[in-house]
Image (cartoon, rainbow, N blue to C red; front, side, top):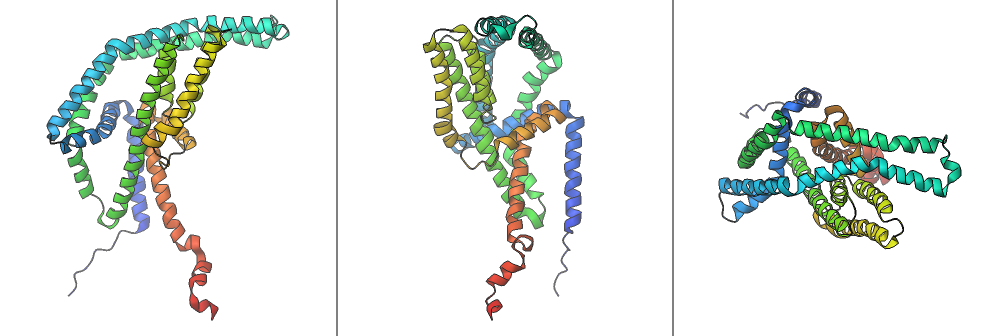
Length: 367
């Protein structure tokens, strides 16, 4: 006698349960954003550092020793950053905000000399330029003060210094065991497809986040060092900003290039060699990124279109705040992979192929 088999859950019920799970996830993200922030940061850092821990394990180190070594190196890097780099960034940012009205005033004087008819006392352009510098100074000052005050608050200090590193350490220590437990809980009927989709998501995230993060770091340091070498004021801030924004393709080069060229024109006006050097720095950076860094570190088949990435960051950032920005790229990658998987199945089904395809492949249709 054959054993009775359990009937598979209907597709409609499966969609309902997965939809409820997704809704619960979004609701928790909405209400617990500030609470789960250190855990999201810790999980992201653990995911990024797991390949390093695995490589150290293959070299013969135990998991605990490998994670401890990673934590020690990360601590030394953070100490060096806080002692050497971050104070300079804060100082240059403050100076840039304070000198914004002066820069706008110089632009106004130049426009007055070149186009006197457009810069009358009652002209709209003159009034807007007069307000621009004051607006930049006011907004920049408020942002900087807000960042400093929040960074110096007791809660954020505890989160940054204690909670996030601790969460990262324990998640990284148990990462492989957690994945094995999650794998054991996968629905048996869909285990193979889920593993296939999860592997594709991991490949996409690995290629984009780890690869693009390394590209951003190299570009940021390269831009900052090169701009400071040519003597551009605020070169460190401009270079690091361009590198950070390079996480979104084309945005970093556009914003950083415009900012650097604007500052270069005011600082080196008349010295076209120096202005050309600033432009050459970003031109060389774009060439190196497009032809060397991105093809080798990110790859050409990541599947995250720049427009889709910008849309995901905008939506999740506006709805869920800073936590939304952290989960935007992983969620965008998951949606992209699942969409491509569903499209593949759609193209193999009757809804896409139709009866005409079956008739064309049926030899009896010609009889």
